[in-house]
Image (tube, rainbow, N blue to C red; front, side):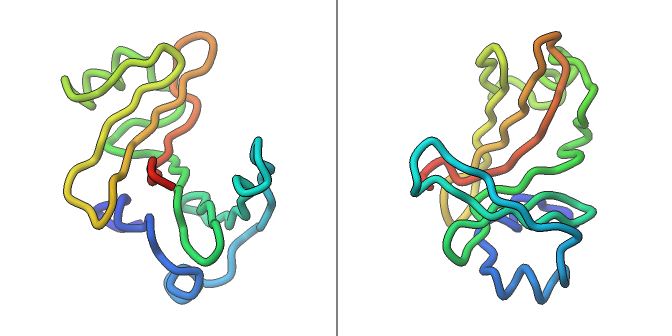
Length: 123
């Protein structure tokens, strides 16, 4: 994975395959609306959510040192004052991209990190 994981959002399908090769697995995710359906390519470094021919979201095993199993207070400490505590998840807007990007830290019912995503909130 690159030093800046946000740089993976926006890759074309061709770029993704050229960079990482054949995925370990591929599966579909059904959205609430038909237009929200995604195809997910699974690699060792993350899960790449694809709509049409571009990556719009990536699920990571670790971002900024935060990983599943970490506590909510620890994640908030790492993310700093700009992070928004939304109860069952934490959001952090990421600066300086070709489009807006957000880091989402999902939390389980006991307040521990369950998943990490960087995505395009405008998508």
